[in-house]
Each structure stands twice: as structure tokens, then as C-alpha cells.
Length: 487
Image 1 (cartoon, helix red, strand yellow):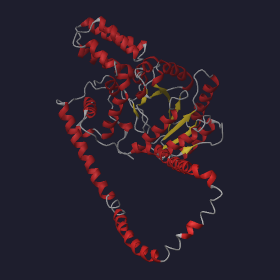
Image 2 (cartoon, helix red, strand yellow):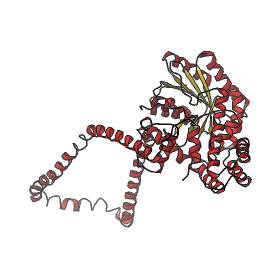
Image 3 (tube, one colour):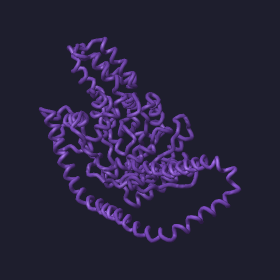
């Protein structure tokens, strides 16, 4: 579906040795010109194929219009000579005797009834036409089309600057990345509002002081960064302030560096790669767990689309057998990406049995990535958590050689409550990572730092919107830059 492989992006965990261009604006203009040339070449190829069928149906419609009045005039003359007088008296005599008994009751209301009947017909027509908007959810597939290059605006310049800061060359960037960075920047707007403005006002051009550190502490806590993560950031800045004079711009750079270190710390402790990617030539099983309403099924559908676009074979298992219409919802997501689905249509089926069948199908078809949806459960319900452990035991027994990931889906708008969920699920489900969703609808995006620092779980994917393209692999450098981006 797409040439760009999101699971094989350049590792930007360390940008200290990255060679940045001398003139960022000139670099962005060169990248824009290159991407625009590519897009125009694609448009010229597609326009040649789509242009001929469109004008074809138009000329016959125009030709038929003038012919109809010419034929109607000669037919009207011979018919009007004899038949006109005959039908004239007929309608006068026939309708009078038939409605004669009814005029007393229908003469006055007939106009109102006729008008009401016409209104009703129009209302019925409107109701009949309403199913067409119901087809619009299918047009959610429209975002699957390749992103289009817009103007050389602030979003593009910022996105290009972020890529250049990671050591990219002009010929190494793609429109997919430019499009995603723009979405991420816009999705972080609510978290960024007030935070960056207040931060710049507090730091400004003056040297770092205890007063500005106190203000910074308040801002970080308001963004749900968490007490532990906030203390780590302030300790570093305080040590630097005691060693030397730290001006405002240097303080912001130190803040960015420390925030990136917080997000990358779980990866370093686990010795894991910065990007979570399915391993080629091997079965990969990813379990989606979490409480109700955080977006597990939607996240799984977007991950399936991402895997297919990146060139992986994928299979989806509908392990959420309790929620009404959960299987149907997952079927829609699977159809959008052309991914097969393994499900049990019976009510309250055993999730472990569904996973059992899905693993067998994946092994028989040499599937590279099996995505398993699970029912939402509260971390305080021991019986449901035990059921989740049962599913994990089935996976370990049937596919001992598979690369298994247990990903907790967290709603960013839940803030510190999401952190408590992560701590509880980590014990029962053997979590290996976190998917942070709904960043575009909350001002609590700072919870990512709390999750990374206090649960010691790496953030693997983030969602910043409702479209298929609004979920991408997590990149700490890009996340921090989007959080602290100036308007």
C-alpha cells in the first residue's frame, strides 16, 4: 500500500552526533522542492488514466437535450386538433359526481392536507437520503490515500527542522514523515497551550533562578508529568544552575534533554531497540490490554493498517468476546486494511479458544504479525486479570518461539489514573510496553513522562487523532519537540 516502512525508521535516540544543516530554511526549501516534484510526477501519471472517462458521458447528455423539444412540438400539433375537445368535457363531468359527497368535509382542509402531504413527502425523501451520510464512515478510508503536499507553511518548516535535527539528508525524508509530524504537532496543541507560553515567560532571557525553577515545577505538574519525573528534571537543572550561569535558551535545551532521557530510560534498562518492529521470518504476537474505553480495538485496527503498509503479513484475533459488537467493529477495521480476522461469533465465547485458533491459523499461513484484541477489564477485578493470564499461558504454550509483546493501551486524558492502571497491569499481564492514545483531546500529554519514569515501561506507539494515519511508532525526540514547539 505504501513504500515507507514505519517499523524501520532511522533511530533518533541519540542526536548528539547528528550533522545538522547550516541553513535550516534552505534545507527545508530543498526538501519541499524535491517532494513537490515527486508528487507532480505521480499526479501526471494518474491524470492521464482518469481524464478520458469523465468527459465521455457528458456529450450524450447535451445532445439528448436539444432533440427532445424538437420531437415534442410536431407531435403536439396533430393530437391537439381532434382529441382536445373530447378529453375536455370528460374530466369536467367525471370528477364532479365522484367527489360530490366529499366536498363538505374536504374543500377547506384539502389545501392544508395537500400542503401537509407534500411536506410529509419531502420529509420522507430527506429521511431516505440520510443513508448516504451513513456511507461517510466508509469514507474514513480516504485518509489511507497517500498524503498530499501542502504549502510551504509553518507546519512543513517545523517538521523539516525536526527531521534535519535527527541527521536526515534532503533525499532521506518522505512525505509520510512530514505528514505525521504535522499531525503530532497539532495533536499536542492542547498540552502545549499555556505550557510553552508560561515556560518562555518564566525563563525568558534571564539566567535560571530558584524562582523560575519553582514556576517550572508548577507547569510540569499541571501537565501531569508526575512528581517523580518532575523531581528528576528539577534536580538536573538545579545542579547545572549551581555549577554555572544558565540562560533561558540553555535551560530549555537542558529541559528537552532531560525529558528525552526520562522517556528513553526504560529502553536502556531493558536493552531494547528504540522502535518496536515485527521480526521478519518469525511469528510475532502482540496482545492489546487495558481497561474499557481506552481505544484497544481502534488501536489494533490502526496497527494492522500500519503493518500492512510497512510490508508485513498480518492477522487479527477478536479476543474481546464480551463487549457488544466488538467483533463487528474489529471486522470493519480488518476490512479497511485487507487483513483476515479470526473470531467466534457465538456470545460470550472463550477468549483463550479464539487465541488458540488464531495462533494455529497464523502458523499455518506463515503470518508475521498476529494482533490479539482483548476484553476491557478493570485492574481491580482479579478474575478478569486471571483470564488475561490464561490467554498469555496459551500463547506461551502454543508459540514458544514467537516474539510476544503485551502492550497496555492508555488513554492520555486519564492522566495519573492511567499510571495506576499501568502499575496494576504490569504485574498480571507481563507488560512490555505502552500505547498512548487520544493525545489530541487532552492537556495531560505529560503523563507519558510519568508512565516511563514510574512504571519503567517504554512507550511504543502514540495516537494523536482518530484517522488511520494518526497512530505511529513513538519517537522521544519528536515527542519532546512537539511538546515544546513554539507557536
